[in-house]
Length: 56
Image (cartoon, helix red, strand yellow):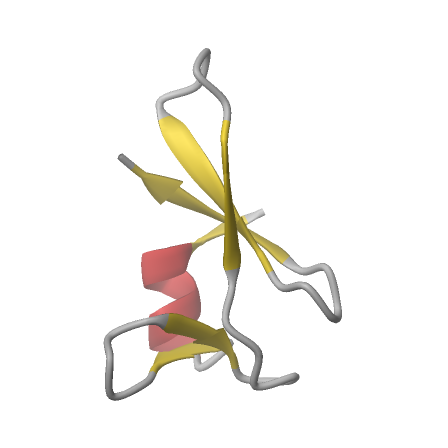
């Protein structure tokens, strides 16, 4: 699982005009899943189900 920062640098993600993270492949806004026991959130593409971790 890549971090969101690395995925932005690699071109797997991009930010739209409202600074939301979007999947470059599907062009869908990523959803967020928070696990209270972890120090990071998981961002998930609703269409292709790619997962990226994001530090809180």
